[in-house]
Image (cartoon, rainbow over all chains, first blue to last red; front, side, top):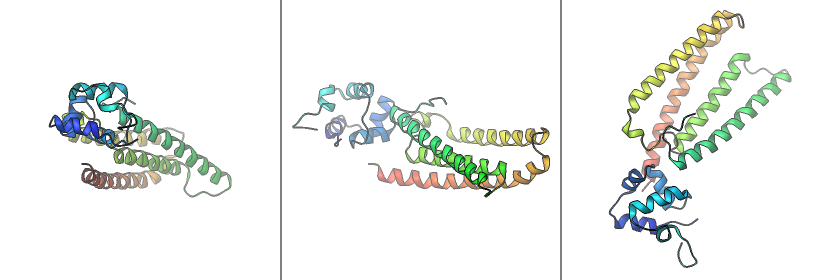
Length: 69
Length: 147
């Protein structure tokens, strides 16, 4: 599983740190760090919570096709 | 064991580490029993079980802390210092209660319990200090590595 750069970019676009995002969705900063680095595969509930906080869709942040990923 | 507010990644890690530590405990107890059956006694009966349990508990806690699965995201809003003090106090109370109960029952001789109680307390204190130091260094290293 590769790095999730789209999540990192969306977070940076909202001017949020990993800690801010983690507090907003109720997880630890290390969990957000692990998701961004591709070390952890989050559940659909956590994906939805992250998308709601960042104002993105699941496709925008988590869908992987041949071109991106 | 209650969830203690761990997030989903922490719960998954904790479950995995718990399973591995349980298997480790089982194997260590089997090895100890096998050695006892072969006539090799490295330490007398109550102390060997205590030491094996202490080792497994220590490994479990250290691995949880190393994987950041010991405290949940809401831990900072609580009061960890008070929690630690209360936990230590409770541990001391339980230890004393167990020793007093063991002394007063007829299952073991009082002299034998007194023989092992001092080493157990020393070992427990030593292990606690070791865990505290390792925890401190792991936390420092992890904070440096992240971001």
